[in-house]
Image (tube, rainbow, N blue to C red; front, side, top):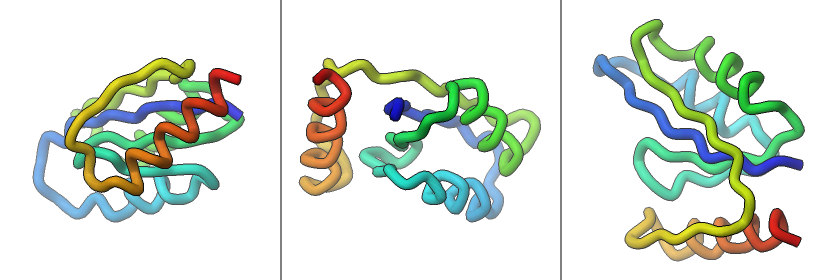
Length: 94
């Protein structure tokens, strides 16, 4: 399984529930920041991007980056997200 960080910039205010549902459809996910998700999948970065873009406006931005194990963060959404992210990255580095 690959671990990706997904960041997006939603240009217009509208209902993005379909995007959130797609992100939650991955068996591994957490949302440490408002516009940042961490997901686990066997898909490539391009496949993830294309799948998620299907629920976004054409002018919305998205960045999908594969994580390799080293990271640092502060003030994420909650302690559970922080612990989960640390666990995912440790597994990825092993």
